[in-house]
Length: 182
Image (cartoon, rainbow, N blue to C red; front, top):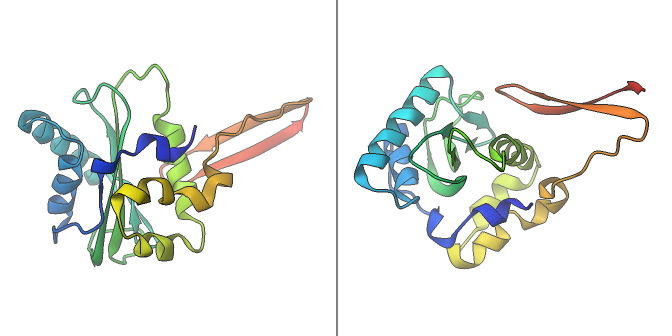
């Protein structure tokens, strides 16, 4: 699985127009092509999630996400706001890059958390903000958006030769811990 497989051309907007957190969320939701009622429901779900704590993870990146019945499969959208928006990020800096992730409550493929984790991991790479600023055209950038980080984005099968691997997930990070030999 590669992250770019979840992006479609029409779900990438390289110059968001909104100037507030709510306007940005609505614009990202609009990229998913849902009907008005579904867009309203999804906006309420994302607002509830943001009220629990900002999805602004720092380094000018936010990953608003939730589970909702308005989608039948995992959907991902990307938006960029060159000027930045106050998203109440953990580093208190404006956010320029937004990765929206929405999945149904019961997802057979169970890709929601892995995709969220891969985007968070990708976001930690030192050159990511610069690369995201350089994106020029959604049609080409669907492939280019995440290509340089393929070593992070490719799903890895853990090698368990006599060892157990535990993945710790919390609101701020995704870390792997290797346990002692079995």
